[in-house]
Image (cartoon, rainbow, N blue to C red):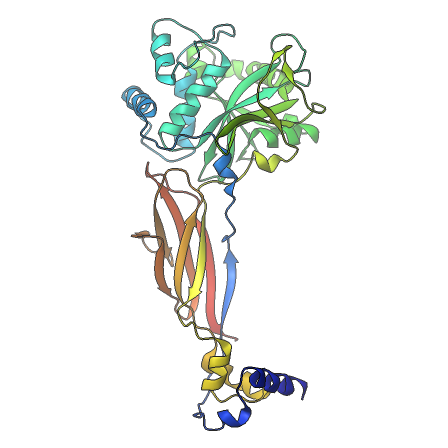
Length: 404
């Protein structure tokens, strides 16, 4: 038969003949147990997170000073994300009233901005975005100021740009939009939105379906109650709808800093902003350069039995395709693994593994031995940062069983 001949040729090429296997011990095969991946989020890591402008450590003097100061003013230790993110948004938004013309000297830290506002200073949307992003960074949440601009950004008058923020939520497994000047976040059908998702809904004529949610303390500070919500929503919706021309974020590659810009309703690239110079602009037409996953974990599976197929063929005296199929249960792969974990997490500290929904176990390194049992196995892996913030769970369900 064709398959038998091909197996014979394989043995001959490897210097082994069917006759040489004649003395191999006989064995009685049982049922064939198969390893089947039932569900898996085990996907290749996206290394674009390395283009984020992030501090190398959460314990820089600036971040440490900011974190210690803020945590004396407000408790941001309770709950999980996104609750912590929204609490930070609310706290920053009520620290001062907006002044679109007051720009602090270059290099002023977020901590110093907060000290200045205690003395009566007021600042722009830029400073709201900077302070909330730095605060979230200090707590272990990758975040960034997000510049949004009108379609006439290049030579329009003042007011062609606004600064908001986006922060990576591990529980939502996505970037989410927050506007600290107005203490607002956005949802659609119960899902938190990022700015590009807001743009997509606007382009589809569904902008009215977005829910803009202001915080309670912000409303209290500005003496607004339930009867004012409809008018506030109308005002904010009208305001933010102007800024779907372009969006930009800080960007780093090979140590060089730039402003990465994505055209939305705007047409083509620009070289100035409101008629003024605009340095180090870099353009992309791919939203994935803005919206890549963070804090994920990928898992590599290595079988502990490293024998090659030809070794197993020799061991079991297989000379034909029929024998191969009949004896396969004797040498079929068994789920006895060494797992190697890799991460895409800034400020990584350690890995954790959970088997079949039991307790999370901290791993001492990046490898671990796992032997799956008969039936359905659930493996979950995640990375944990230096701030103790756990990343999204990589969940795999693997069945080891004979066909029913």
